[in-house]
Image 1: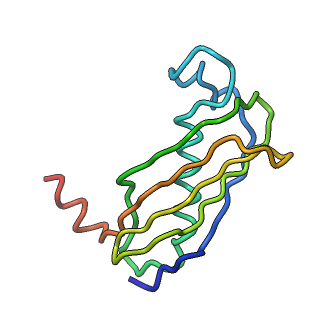
Image 2: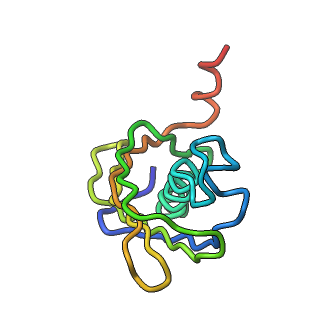
Length: 127
């Protein structure tokens, strides 16, 4: 594994669409950004933050998350989720994540832990 370092960062920006809502995703009955979709964007930002530092055949898998969804976001709202490497211990990488609206209002914050693995060896464990 190449050196994943504290402070590495990436962001994902996306508009909330009808298919991103709690109503559409089955996690509620309101037409606002679904927490599972928000978590998915946060995981994507985490992956992007370290992707260039991983060796060939390596990837990261999610192992733990804590996400506080603090404010609703309607369809059409532009959301930016930023993941910053907060802690590295060997293959374990912990990220701070923050999601905000275009006006910089915080929508969510939390911590995601991912573990760097060899993709082939990881998939062999499925058999």
